[in-house]
Image 1 (cartoon, rainbow, N blue to C red):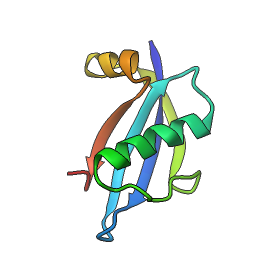
Image 2 (tube, one colour):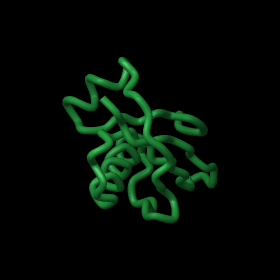
Image 3 (cartoon, helix red, strand yellow):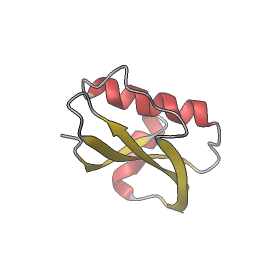
Length: 87
């Protein structure tokens, strides 16, 4: 399966920049759906009400799915790769 990687940078409430990737099946092209996945993740992290638009989240590239991502892709429709300041 091929997936699309959406590169995302969001300013946390404390001013630090969170950097994470939203991974979705490559046929998923609707940016509003992808932004909603990001907003769900931000809420889980206690960072609700942060802006998430094309300014913060953009398509980066396609790649082959990694085994660690597959279960979440099947159950949630997306996977989040935490890169910087996400903990």
